[in-house]
Image (cartoon, rainbow, N blue to C red):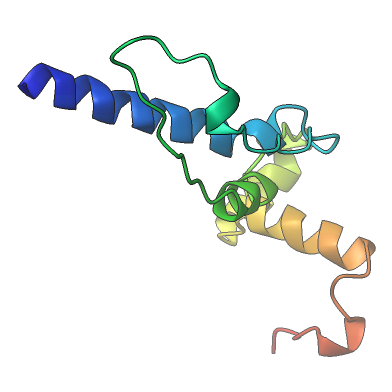
Length: 114
């Protein structure tokens, strides 16, 4: 009996994982989520049964939108040495500069170091 419960739970878990990832398979050009099947129209083998799978895809989409991407940066050694001496975090600085360039940060709201 334990094995049946184990495989049932494993199957449901696998189904949920697969279902949640449908909108993410192709990135921005995601596939639409398929319509649910009518259980009466499915060919079910003897002793098998149909189970509904519920999955929330919103948090997966949010996770993918906010996923960090590694970028390689090349700068002169003297600039790297000076920045490291000041304790500059290159990742934060690059994110800030890109957001500012894209207009996501208003220049009037920038804080200046005093």
